[in-house]
Every structure is written in structure tokens, then in C-alpha cells.
Amino acid sequence: MVEPISDGFEAAFTALLAGDESALGGWLGADAGDQARLDVYRNTVAKARVDALAGLYPTIERLVGPDWFRQAGLIFAGDAPPSSPVLDLFGAEFPAWLETFPPALDLPYLAAVARLDQAWNQAHRAPDAPVLSGRVATETPPARLFASRAGLHPSARLFWFDWTVPSIWIANRAQAVDAAGVAWEAQPEGLLIVRHAQVVTWRRLSRAEWSFLRACQRGRTLGEAAQAAFAIDPQLNLAAMFAGLLEAGALSTLQSET
Image (spheres, rainbow, N blue to C red):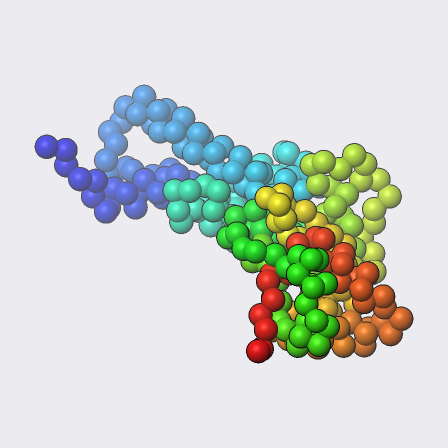
């Protein structure tokens, strides 16, 4: 019968993978071959973690380069090892960790850009749900439409920044051709990340659009959301804005009060 692994050994093995060279001293002899085989295993595990992190944060890797990212990833994996065997779930703390990582302090946009990468992953894994279609919206009497609620789609992630974080993120996504000319500036920008028709997409948002969606996110009626948008831009073309957000798949189905 195979003996179960003791809690002590499992904890020591985890400590070894985190970098404690002496963690398995009580279980290993003086055989150099044993240590060499463990080193191979540890390096393989470390590479898998860094590769998983790069897959989750491709924009960060492009911004800092693969060598910088690998070294940072190894340190992060030691500071915050995976809590699940599913490596796709690894790295939830990475954006917050970057805010305290000394080599990243000269790149003040890095943590915010990481949050957009994270939002893209969250949108990719979010549950399916119906979206509010233009046909349903146009066939609903205006009074009833504006008295109804339509929350954000479960995959939707809504952002407003006082700096050019979305521009930096968009310019450095894997599909981007040229990131030249994009600067870190104190210029407000909004962004919507959402999965529509099984594809994760992004859409830049004006302040009025962001205010409209934020009101919907907070459970306000469409009429109240429209008022929030007009408070930002009294000249807003509400019909055009609403059609654009519907086309993006930002809103879920109507919830009528009656």
C-alpha cells in the first residue's frame, strides 16, 4: 500500500519550490543526484508559473520585455505562489504586487495596465448571458424603456482613468502593430472590455458613455442613466450613444418595473 504524503513533507516541498534550498534536508541524503533532479523539477515548475503569468499579462511582458518579466515573475511566484493547481487562475494579486515592486516604481502605469489585462481574462471567463438587442430596445415603448433597468453584461468591465492607461494598453496588446507615439499623460480616458459573440473586445468610452454605463451598473433605470450622461454632455446624441453600446454588447436584458 502506498503511504500518504505527510503534511510536513508537502509543506517542505512547497517551501523548496519557493526557494528554500534546505527545506527537504530531513528527507534527502547527501546524494548529489537527488538534489540535481529536484533542481530540474523546481526549474520546470518555475518556468510553468512564469509562462502562465505571461499568458495572463501579455501587455506587461511586451512593455517591459521578456527578460525583465521573467525575473519579476520568478520573484512574484515566490512571494505569492499559486493557491490552485489550475495555473490559469494564477496571478490574481499581480497588479497589486507590481505597485510595491521596486523596479516597477519608475513605470507608474504598469499596475493599471496589468488590471486591464486581468479584466480581459475575467471577461473571457465570465458566464454567458443574454444581451440587450437593438431590436428589443426599439420595439419597447419609450416610457417603458426609460423606466426599465439593464445592468452590464456579466463579462463587462468598466474603467475610467485620469491618465492615458487605455491608450498604452491598446497600443501594446499582442495584435498592435506600432506603439510609438503613445505617451503616459494626464489625459482622462475611459474603456469598456466585454465579451460579445464569444470574442473579448474593447471600446473606448467618452465620459458621458462611462457615466451612462456606470449608472446602469449601479442599478439605475435607463432614464436615470440617460440623465447622468446628459449631465456630462448636454449636446449628447443619446440615440447614437445607446446604439453604439448595444452594438458592443455592453448591456444585459431589460428588467421592467411593471
